[in-house]
Image (cartoon, rainbow over all chains, first blue to last red; front, top):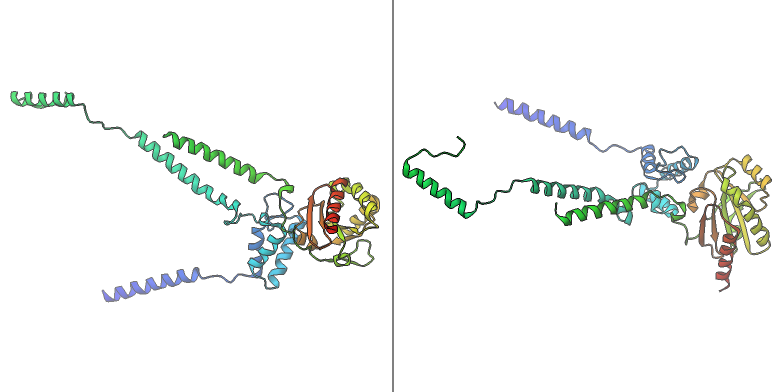
Length: 160
Length: 177
């Protein structure tokens, strides 16, 4: 039993070690950083395309600028700040959460809350209402039960 | 469904439609560049006619009109006569017009200059660094730089003689105050 437990423990540690190894932070290459930054930047001469995805000459030039800045050792935030200085927040495909355009991030939450509210309202309205019978019906039923008990008749629910 | 909930949903959908309409509308004139109101980026570039280099600093203290253009850009051709008239009007004054070739080959740009009567100093922006520094989206775009070296305004798209003159005269009036 002790040996089995030891084996289970070893297996658990092995699994945990494998998981930890697989999720370790990867070394980001310069090219990877260029890809990541250019995928956030809007191609200024196209519609809805990132600098990374666009083949437009101006997008290629912007990619070159990002690559040069990465090679110079600038941080991602410094590179983003340089683009923001030239083009404003518009140059970023995803609106900043701290700007007015960042309200767009609330749209899915609002849509979810609205859907939930509608669903709850529907469920409530579809539930059968179990209203108490009026007093005269109750009185009539009691009277009938008492009568049948007095006659010693089997009680029926009226389904026969 | 309660009435308040129905009204809320309708109002929410209407608000979403308005937001999406505003978000997807694409008019470059609405896009605010980050450079207006800031110091004009200094640059040195090869002159298109091959006579050496031109630096923005050569024109310190003058009113500078930067016009980004390309030979493949139809609105650039449309606005060219207005640029010629304005250049002829101000070329001996404190105003300088500088053309900057945007994403174009030197040969085609030279051909454009020759056939369209461009006589003002023009430089090639081969790697797009000047356009990037000014926040240019696509040609034609025109920037007005005051004597203090601050970018006072920008015009996206085809520019008219009236807009050019107004921009220049406003800068002159500001400088005179």
